[in-house]
Every structure is written in C-alpha cells, then in structure tokens.
Length: 555
Image (tube, rainbow, N blue to C red; front, side, top):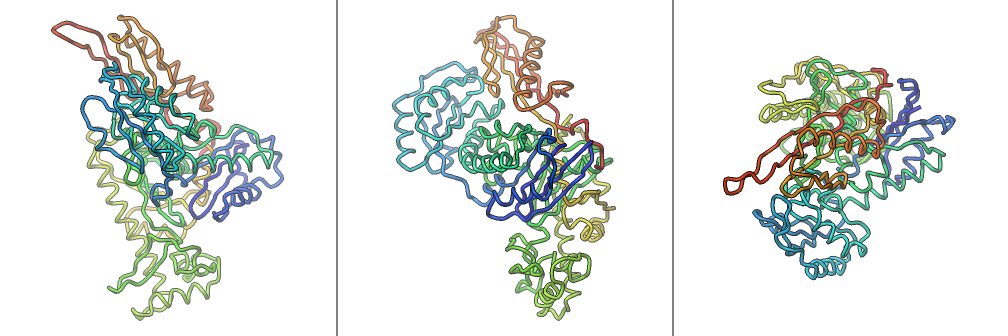
C-alpha cells in the first residue's frame, strides 16, 4: 500500500493506494495546528489498516511557497566572497549580508585566499543580531567549493544550520545561487518543523516505511534528505497537481490543467502526457532561483476566496481568503456559497449562503441566485483570462518539456482538465469562458495527494571537468576527483551516470530501470597564447520525472 498526502492552505488531502488503485481518500481542513491536522488526515484515511502494509509514503506541501509569498521567512545571515566580474554587493539579500575578501577564477583556481578574519567578523555580526542560520556562497564554487567549505568549517559550529551554495545546483549563475542559498537558510526552521511534525505523527501511527517529499520538478526526494535543501519543497503543491492530472487522466493532446483549490487556482500545460519544465530555475516571490521546476502558474482565486462588490459596481473575487465560506460559518461570502445557493453543492447551510449572496448583490438589485450566477461566471472568466496570459507567456519563450526543447511549436490547449474540490461545479463555467471542452477525472478532489503518492524519485547532477586543473567536480554529490589530461566525454558520461544513480539511490530511488535524461553536454578546448592548455567538459544529467510503474491510470 502507498500513502499520499498533500498539505494545502485550505485542505489536507490524503489517499491510500493498493495495487495501483485508490482504495481510500479523505479531505481534512488544514488548521493552524499542523500536528492535529496530520493526525486527523491519517486517521480518516488509514482507519484500521495495518501500518506494516505501507511500503511507501509521499507528501507534498505549499508551506514553503506560502512563507515566501507572504514574506514570513526567518532571518538568515549571508557571507559571500567574490570572483571576477559581477559585484556581489548588487545581490544583497536578507537582514545581515556580508561580502568578504577571497576570490576563485572561472576555472576554480584560487586567485585570492579567503579572508578568515573577515569571515569571523561577519559571523559575529550575524550572531549578535540574533540570527541562528547562515548561507555561504563563493563565486564559481561549483568548480571549486573550497572557500565555502572553509567558511563553514571556521564558523559553522556557531549556527543551527549552514546552507552552502555548491550543494544547491551545479548550474553557473552567481545572483541566482545567492538567492537560492538564502532561501535554503531562511526556510530551514519552517521545513524542519514540518518534517519533525510529520515524522512524529508517522511514528505515533507506527508508520515506518520509506518517506518521500514531492519536489517542484515532479519527482520525489527522501524526506530526511530534503531537510538540507528546504527551498526544494517550494512549489511542491503545484507539482502535485501536474502529477495528479497525469496519473488520473494521462492528458493526451495539449491539455490545460487547472487545479481549483480553496485559496488559489494552479495552472499548467501538458503536451501528450509530458509536462512543461522551467529548467533554469523558477522565480519564488521576489527571488530568482536555481530550482528546476515544472512550469506552473498560480492565481489567488479559489472556492473560498472572499467575494465583495467594489465601489465601481463590479464584483471582486479574491485574492484574499478570510476563512471558511459563510454557509460553513465563515466571515465572508465566497464562490462556494454561490455553488450552495444555486444547488450545485449540497453542503453547509444553504439559507446562510443565500443571504450572503443577497447581501453582496443588493446594491445592484440582484437577488441571491442572480448574484451567485454572476459570481461563478466572474470566477470562470478571471481564471480564463489568467490562463490565456499564461499560455501567451509560454509561447513567448523557448518551450521545454521534461524530455526536450520544442522548437517552433506553438502551444494551443485543445481541452481543459479540472481537478480540485469544486471541479464538477465550476467546469461548465470555465469551459464556456475558455471556449474549450472541460472534463474532470475520477478522484478529482484528491488529485494532488494521488500525484504525490505515485511520483517517482528524481535526482540531478552537474559534472564539471577541467583537464588543465586536473580535476572533475560534481558539486551536488560532493564528488571531487583527480583526472589526467586525456579525460574524455565518454569517461565523463560514465562517471556522471554512476554518481547520478548512486545519488538517486541515496534519495530513495529504486536503481532498477532508472530513466536518465542528458540535460546538457558541452566540451571546449581551452587556448592560451595559441597553445592548447586543456579541455573543459560540462555535463548535466538527471532522472526523468514520471509515475511509478505499479500505478494504473485513472486509479
């Protein structure tokens, strides 16, 4: 049996899967008490199932994303050393940012030793400000992590957590590396608390099977391993939407996937069962990161969004969620109240929802039913407008899938798949607003939990070989080996595959039948003074995201 659990801002969904099918599912309101929410969700799903029968547990959450968007990050200190080119002062982030002397060149050669006294002074300043977590970045650290390792060795023992830039990604991008390292430090406590709560509840329930967390790229990582890279949990929820849509529907043709939740609507595009990808890193709030992610977009409109009549006489829906719908005792009218009023949803107190609708529409002279109808039409039109803008943006840039780059192919959705709790009630309105056929799959209400449960483990490495320096580095796996002047691309491929498979196994993957994608492969001859001085080989490869083989589509 497999357990899937998605902790959303409004609902926590859980499913139990046996022999490739969903055999139990439950939705639990997400409250401020995470332990209680998780406990109830598991009790509602597992019932009297023998804990020993669970062979896999996978989770997704929007907690990190919400913390970034709502500016609820912990303070984190940063120590950054420079290199040739960009001034690191331009990329200052956080309340205690320090640039120290020390320099590596583009090949990773040290041109200026790291200034130990400056690092010690910076650390003291950060600690004196009451900040317990630290991020350390040196330029070109993916080609030589020595300065970051030195700084962590000198001052790391004074902090509860140290995030190092070279452990985050093998990609070269100094500004994005600084921002991503900062997020890994600033999200550490939040993610540690989430992981600790989860582990506590799992132990309480006697659940000891392998535990995974869904990443933004649609793959999973061992829960314990994720604690060192908390920013990797951002966008976990939207990724679960995509994987859930694939698992339940398959998404043939060009499918616009809409996950209509209580607080937000997440959207994505899938082409013949292949999700679109943001390979160079996503933007999270104000931060451009190196986090590889499925291409998704979120807007602040959901079933529980606040509805109000603005002074200009127009209905406003979202982006704020003030609590449950009025018909459930909440403080504000919502689209869910509109569904209840029109009899589309048999839940809550219909008379209370209808009164809430009448109050919203009274200045316009609308009765409750007319107001409810206009609210659902307005919600669908707002989602449709955002979806059109999302597709326009996709077509304005190179389109990457998890397998390849689509050259000269215009993305035009031919159908819409809707998942999330209100899918049956809103599908007709959205279909009309977009002028496209809409459908919703079986288990639409818990699709995210299904997506988390059946996504397979992924991993990614970047190999950098420099025959002049005589070294090959795979920073994500902390590998640094000596090589000779004749090191070839074939040797790089062989080493990269071996390290990637080992890394995937550490992250919880079954090493049998791993599907490996070559994401980048480049080799350059280095010339100095008309003489060849060596070869630079760059290789990026990863485990392709997908579904576990035992899942049966549709569930």
